[in-house]
Image 1 (cartoon, rainbow, N blue to C red):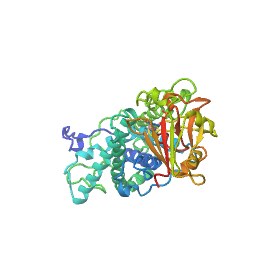
Image 2: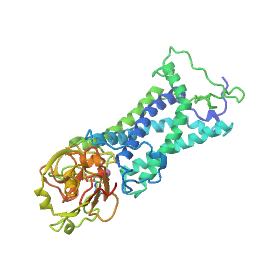
Image 3: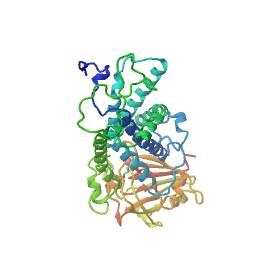
Image 4: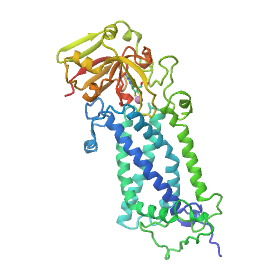
Length: 437
Ligand SMILES: Nc1nc2c(c(=O)[nH]1)N[C@H]1C(S)=C(S)[C@@H](COP(=O)(O)O)O[C@H]1N2
Ligand SMILES: [Mo]
């Protein structure tokens, strides 16, 4: 056999010599991504709905979303661990998919350089959609990971970037799936999860001829990714999938612990948030009182809770609140960043009892919650009537048998079943019932 001289131009298919590339490898990775990305997108949409963005501008980070809010619904309060599950999946599965995404991109990278760059109008459209697909995927991973790791990197703008980026990405993803799914399913159906190249009894796969005339464009104009001049394999395709899987497993194992307490949490090396404090408040802290400049004088004996409704305003000291009917609820904190706690034993005044104080005896309405925190995001949040009505929704004064610690929101904080941590306002100073109707 006459060896052609090695090519140095990436536009030449012979430049790409890895024997791993081929439709089987790309199809298996593609099918894994199809399942995983669908889950990550769906849980991402749920996360947005869980913020109650349609209830009040204080909750909505993307007020210009227009039709993209078509699916919003009233986020339920049952099961009480709902957001813990959906957001834990969103972040953990998203991170676990990173090696699969990178391997998939690597497997198709020769197409990026294929010549001619545009063969037809349809091909041009397809290339634009692939640009949005790849760019969108990398953008969503980057903004998501950076938000978890360095939450101050995009003050306020993370939600906009990640939300609109997700819609651009998913549009391109839908087009891509429609074009490629039949082929991927066929390849994996025909060959199963066993790479035929690894099976000595299998007939040799047909080698595409790469002289320009004989090069048949595939159904979408691309060559079939198999190197015409492969290097000696050092790893089988299944072995390569194993390496990708091991990478994913490593990320999973160093992320998933953030959804659990105890020793498991210490395995969450990639989830840097929330130092716990010793004692009854021994669970994650998102932002400390010092970090958001809560002053001791703000939370001392002079603190009053303002409860407002049609009857006007009531002011209550902490002692006065402790005189009211106190109730317990076992509820977790579940943050948008993916970490969560197990159920903690909260004790405090029911929101619906406070609504009654404000003049809504039978039919508690929405409420605007304000913190005494002066700067920064999440110092105000709106809760929907179904959340106010739930008997487990509390203005908590104590947790796990002791007063709240300053970092967990002393003198009083909100805790609502199934809601994202963002709605569990700490250092509460005012509740305004019915203002959002
Ligand atoms: N006032 C105020 N309340 C707040 C926040 C905040 O920044 N300011 N952060 C929220 C977020 S994002 C989360 S996840 C929870 C975390 O509660 P924890 O620190 O007690 O675990 O508090 C919520 N309450
Ligand atoms: Mo959070």
